[in-house]
Image (tube, rainbow, N blue to C red):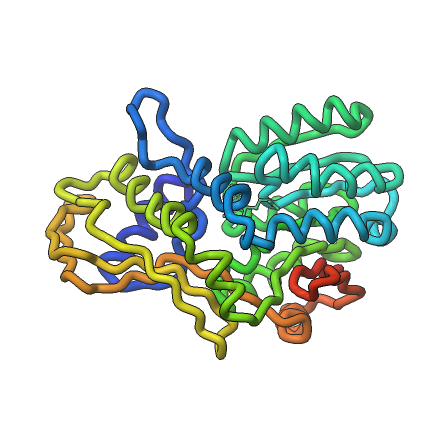
Length: 320
Ligand SMILES: C[S@@+](CC[C@H](N)C(=O)[O-])C[C@H]1O[C@@H](n2cnc3c(N)ncnc32)[C@H](O)[C@@H]1O
């Protein structure tokens, strides 16, 4: 299924079936330069989230962690590996997190960044060609959740998945995703994945509930309005709501309707009531043992876990 078809299907299940927690892939919209002040600019809001809120510790602490432990991470990578990175992110994320690790890997054969954002793919390719010209690069513009099997196309695969992006998946989807990755990595691949394990509500609220995550979450509604076949939809008629569910280890990113509205989505009428809540996506916060138990259920073998000194950001090394 291509991106737009999935986007439409997921948006229909959000508004017509009340499906929850499945819109995380649509956070990184690129503004259309032909539209003045295009609000569908998730890319821009994501940059503001990671760079303009000093309490958003995830990005900063993962950079610090990787810069301390990259020799250890690299020591697990077999020679002649193909490193497939899921979601390399911005040029800054690539330079500060991926590059130190990639440089430390001995005899790296190829680097394959997979992202739905073409800007991020182009940036990572340009930087790697400059910094490690001997490594071959193949960019893949694709949804890595839906197309995990692409890993099988590369010899000695090592999947690198930083940024705690995996924790945008619901627990069931995370388990399904890890199971499929484990199968795709057979017989001797590796998964290196960054996870936020923070359970402190106050610091989570400070990280997410200062308006920047609200802009990013609401950008999905502008993206729907801009790119999907919808008429009469008011994407401004919603308000962001943060919620921490400690039992599920889940920060919910919800929007609540601030007005009644009726619109037509792909020829289907939709009614939204004022006060109606839509749970668009989540940031799960898995304690180390909890994440390792999901990984084991998925058939993966925890080999190591490297923890930031503040005890929140973790890099898990998982074998098959
Ligand atoms: C939270 S950002 C993390 C970026 C980077 N890894 C870092 O550490 O800062 C998520 C990245 O994954 C990409 N992404 C998110 N969901 C995706 C999906 N389902 N398929 C492909 N790329 C996706 C985004 O475009 C972005 O580059």
